[in-house]
Amino acid sequence: MNLNFWLPLFIPSTSLAAGVVIFFLPEQMRLTRSFLNMASAILKIALVVPLIWGVFHQQEYRFVLPLFLEFDLVLEADSLSLLFVTLSSVLWLVTTLYAIGYLEDGFQRSRFFGFFSFCVSATTGIALAGNLFTLLVFYEFLTVTTYPLVTHRGTEEAIQAGRVYLLYTLGAGVVLMVGMIWLSSAVGVADFEAGGIPEITRVTTTAPLNVIFWMLVLGFGVKAALVPFHGWLPVAMVAPAPVSALLHAVAVVKAGVFGIVRVVYDVFGVEAVTAMGVREGLIFFAGATILYGSLRAIFQDDFKRRLAYSTVSQVSYITLGTAIVGPLATIGGIAHLVHQGIMKITMFFCAGNLAEELHFHRISELRGVGRRMPLTMGAFTVAAMGMIGVPPMAGFFSKWFLSLGALEADMPFIIGVLLLSSILNAAYFLPIIYYAWFCEPEHPLPERPATQRWEIHPYLLLPPVFTALVTVLLGLLAAMPLSPLSWARLIMFREYTP
Image (cartoon, rainbow, N blue to C red; front, side, top):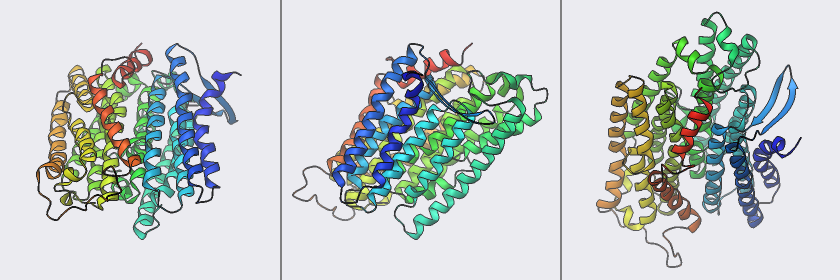
């Protein structure tokens, strides 16, 4: 056993250990708690960097803990897991800085940051899972650790939102577990393998495999907010802004769609999915979710609920690219895993800033707010343009490759879905931008205190400005090595092309 064996375990362990320590810190030890949060986030990134270098140089990183009945806890690194774990690690650092500023005068901060750390530990465990069993373990750990974050405020509305969240996610976990056990009884332990598990192609009847496939997709599709299993997501917006950012950009919805990618490419494989005739159904669910989420977003006046329905729509681009199963569509979908995360976390940071500084929660309240908080609304504008797909923002390249993939797969109707979705994106984002920059406020906006140098606390301002800048750079530098687009291309042609 050497570092290559232990490194995949160390990465989720950093935030796990930090969370345990933070739980026992008294509330008044603010500096110690902030130091532990930031130090563990930086350490996680420091551990991911050599992992990236090693995988790109064909080194193997695999941790195995035998448990029972041949079900092993396996953590390993491949190109796909590295993309997700890098996104999670970087955005955790940014969100941690934001959360420290957001909860500076809050309550139960040690409890909050303890579960916050556990949540990221679960997410990185999902990213590095080497088989379906390990993915399920961390997937359910994520459910348990995000519930206290959703209910953190302790209001009746928060408690009810937590109940809805658990009802959806625990039910999905049961379906996922049954599907995993059924699959294991049919083909053996489901270790992830590029191109799919070879034993699946040897099963003579496809009927049970069809059922198993849809059970796994349902289990992951709840957290991926596929319609009609999306109902928990808008309700969960009662959570504090850092939690909303984490749910939408890093943790829960990304864990769900990442699981779907694994099922299609590393459990069943493209050939089996095509032969079984299930990809058309997955395309239908993804397309319907994209349009439904966009339509619902238009009619939401609550800022965070509009962003929530936008997430319902945008995350399904990843599912759509996976369902098409062509190389170009897969590149677009995997790249959007990163692009959407960065753009959406920017938006939730901005929504949190408006609520924290001006106590604005509704879009109808935002008239003229760009003059009072120009950097915050500038960051939001950049992210919104990226979501719409305006070049050269990162979101444009996701939609471009998805469109090329649709043509490659001889599915031109998908281009219609993408175009209609972009029009709907503009319909619910442009009014926000128009209100903020071009409308006169109905009432005088609260003035900035004389002692406050910036429009809001720097800890709350720097994260959205940084992620908005990254949104632009990921578009301008899309062809550079290690950009999400180049990384997705590497995944496609290294992992999934014979």
